[in-house]
Length: 162
Image 1 (tube, rainbow, N blue to C red):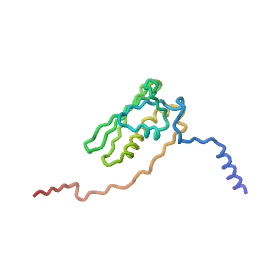
Image 2 (spheres, rainbow, N blue to C red):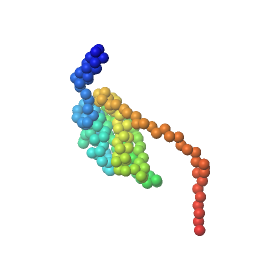
Image 3 (tube, rainbow, N blue to C red):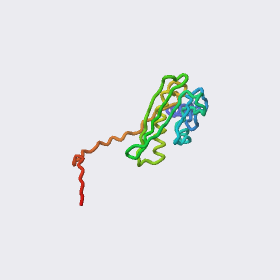
Image 4 (cartoon, rainbow, N blue to C red):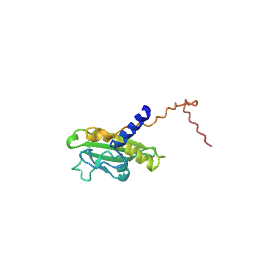
């Protein structure tokens, strides 16, 4: 009987506590860092819906963080994205540079996802110093632990010509 009473009390208390929902973007600009994003070929809608713990501003003078994203083709056919983070106002001097390399075989969704994750990683240092940090949780995806097999041909290359 005590066991059921304990379950009932736990259920009642958990339904009465306010819950934070990550379905909506951050609306209060005093809670999250203000970010101005400059990226010529980025899908801003995708980024705004997947990196929601910051407040995006349209005027770069209002921003606490300015992010510049440049893109350059790689020799393998992919793209090299360089993300430059410049701290402004209370984040002055907190600058960083991150890179994301897309593979030529990746879909557009995979590239946008990788770029958004890299952007989020760069912005987390600014969110850490704002009240929004209380609502951020970090999840680590399962790491593939397959062991690389030894190449019995030792990377030999054969060429046949006629």
